[in-house]
Amino acid sequence: MGYNENQYSLPRWQDISVSRQGMFDDTFAFIPTVGWMFMPLVQYHGGGEQAQFEPLSQYIVEYEWGLAQYLGAGVAACYRGYRLYDSNETRAVVMKWVSFYKMYRDILTSDIIHVQRADMQGIDSYMHVNPKLANKGLAMVFNPTHETIVTTLILPLYYTGLTDAALVSEQGINPMKLTLDRGYNVEVPVALKPLGITWFLIQ
Image (cartoon, rainbow, N blue to C red; front, side):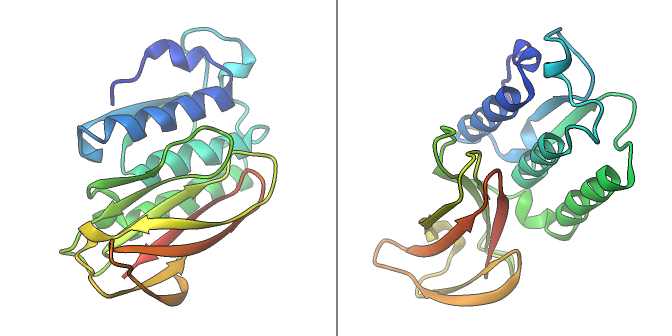
């Protein structure tokens, strides 16, 4: 996806943030499956302990963010290290996001609509769309701040093929029927805890 290898010597949160920004920018030119990213579970270009995700159980929050943003973008990543989990808790996190990817692989590997670029000051989001599927869209939403954010996210649904209404459900639960406005947008209420991640399914 056009990353700079030296970014993987940055501290974990900076690495995660820069990588999410990079995927957001590069998927203007490429579909998600064209490129790949990198996750330094152990040191890659230096940077000391802050630049690696080991021990995974100690940095489980950062590790989950990496898994969520790469699998949620449909972009393959090279997980450079010696293991994918080191405890039952980290194994559960890996299983959670791999299962999510397997369930929604068709939409997650579809084109991306750019909703809100990450600036680490508020929520950011990208959305996959494919009018040929039953799941017309899937929006990933991230809160990289240390505050709870309650807001309204405007999702542009033109390229989902929907014209009048959409069923929008957070993590596939309790779908809401929302009416598209004249610009094919819907307003989705979002409440995300600090360092929270969620996703919305559009049908």
